[in-house]
Image 1: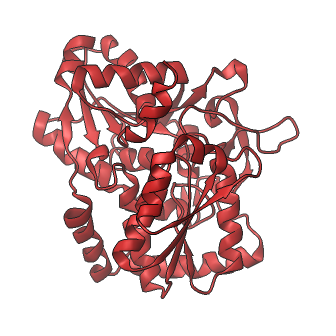
Image 2: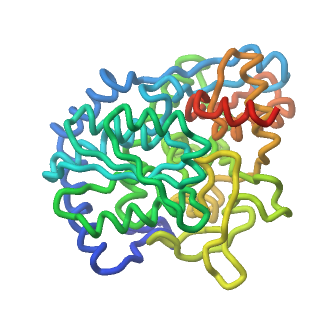
Length: 389
């Protein structure tokens, strides 16, 4: 069931009136421009001629042969300009901001890829840019911090709470309220109050729309399983969307189990969370015993978020998609494995999805097909993982 602002019982807009005023303006603008062919054509042109779409659907022959069982394809979002899926949504929202007369973009970022993409779009479109980033994420993603600064963005360190993505989101919302006349909050994942989850999904669905046509061309049939990592859930909802109407295609999201669910050091909202309200939306999130937002942990800065997008919550409760936990150690092993077998250094976020595929493929027949969303490249993670050795 879909009503405006909701996916079944999930979603909505649970925010103070001062933020709702801004959201109402955003909703009105998006409802108009998503139907405006001139706007959509400009967006498609940027995806093709600036971001470099369509991204490749690559048959991972070495992995498939080594693991045995299913044929594994990788949707190569790591090959996009700026190195991740984030550029898809950013270009769409930045164009919308320009149409709304805004001159300044603000954003939150965890792994830094969304911040880099936002800074890139701001430079392209001649806009001011400020990115809020947790101090802990700044420490472990120093390269991306410099990339944002190189592109002309101001990077503001957030030291409250756990100094990670959750806290960056909080500060970005506060800044939007403080300076709403010229500022557009370019939210990076399929989370938050309406219309953000739907809007981000619409700008990211190009991933699955391409993959659906590409796998038909390559194999002449649908995949058996589509797999993506999930924090807030933007790459996953983009990877799932076109396949949702096909019940024969299994959809699997891989969330961050960190040091193990039993350790309490994880970011597994579905596996260990409960339904509640976080950042203006009703969804699943990791909670304290008193119902507050729990501190979360993941080796992956991009998955280190205590909640998950409301459309994913709906897909889970309706039984259309499944969500499984993947630990740090499993993700790091997958990070090394794909580098050595396919010559691809992927993001540690993406390695969570690969880790699950590595376990799943040997259970399947050689006629079956798995598609894994390779959401980003791993340049940003090399130093952190190198330090673990």
